[in-house]
Length: 376
Ligand SMILES: Cc1cc2nc3c(=O)[nH]c(=O)nc-3n(C[C@H](O)[C@H](O)[C@H](O)COP(=O)(O)OP(=O)(O)OC[C@H]3O[C@@H](n4cnc5c(N)ncnc54)[C@H](O)[C@@H]3O)c2cc1C
Image (cartoon, rainbow, N blue to C red; front, side, top):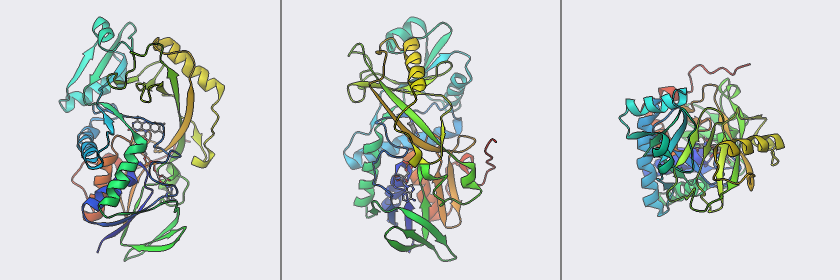
């Protein structure tokens, strides 16, 4: 009988556990903490979901499936996880990322709209455009609630028969011809297969095979929350999520908690030695930089952040994650700062790879055996 150890029940691992359990496969999740914690890649209250994908049209079919699975998880859990407020990409008309959004939409016939001038000002007053800029509206976008979403997937998995070993770090996986031995804090466990979903710990945990792990980096991403000047703006029930490209570049979320508007500046994210090295304090120079970006482009926000927090993710050199079989183990890691929205479909693909050794979905761009070299 197939039995699976899922190492890491964060974003991707919790979804994999849910999809495996739904198929009646015996699965046990191990986590150093517990589902829904904020010490890895899934903290900070909101994540963008979008389908007109600047990272490449190949993602669009996966995103469509992910959207359906988010709805299924909402039904199963009785929780609202995806707020379908839409999303906009704003920036210079000829910017390569604006073009990439339009290309992805065209390739898959997605219902996007292009706004400019007065029309954009009326429809999305929170995000004024500058001369020569346009706004592409993705009607299938919105924001996800990361901590409850991970918790909901783990609970759905447990209800479907999976077990979650909380506060149980895994030290080592030993694979042989018949199965995989998991050496965890609470002892040794034997399974026919394993799934490795250690998130930002992928580069440093010693669990991923070499030379793959060496090609990965762990990076810190800082979120800042700014107060609204006018309570009618950035309403989480109406205001779209936004990505501004060009200079400055950032993502911006409505006031999800009713107080702060979250801004993630898109700058080269700092490489850190490991998630344990994540600093709680943020350099003043960074705070000044994000405050300048807000002052220059978001007149509806106050000048200084009321909250600052840093999280992390694992990155590949080409910005595409790792998803594929390596012996009896499925690798599902390093989603490079954009994996949250995809998580349920990634989890379902993990279940395909365990059950059948292959998947019908197009995941060639995520193949762990592609050439990945760190820039020196
Ligand atoms: C600030 C920030 C903003 C982002 N914004 C977006 C966005 O808007 N939209 C989007 O789609 N994506 C976004 N991302 C990216 C997305 O959140 C990540 O790609 C995704 O959450 C990664 O999921 P994961 O399962 O790989 O990692 P995690 O969710 O961190 O899960 C890894 C889990 O593995 C566990 N673990 C690690 N090692 C071990 C071990 N040895 N034993 C047991 N357990 C272990 C950890 O405790 C953790 O629970 C953002 C990321 C960050 C950091």
